[in-house]
Length: 80
Image 1: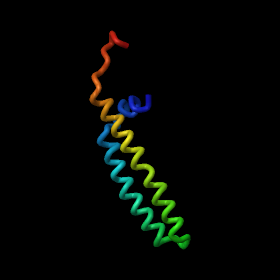
Image 2: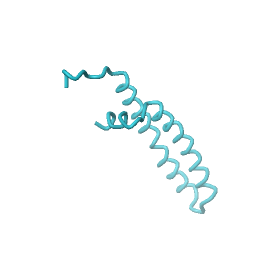
Image 3: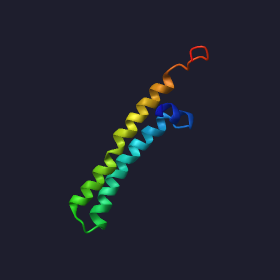
Image 4: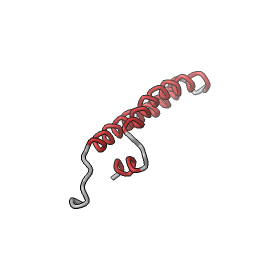
């Protein structure tokens, strides 16, 4: 299970939520940078912004899954 493995290596729901909010800012930043720095125009800037913007829902989903995992009781050795 991916969520269990992430939790075992130290990733917590707060980390995923922070990454989600950071990716929202990064999406705007990449859009603005691509718009100003590249001669490709608005279309390319929009694609970069949308690409980075897709990360936020993924991180929010991982945050919710990790939060549920953190709240669930640990299975005892006899149940496993």
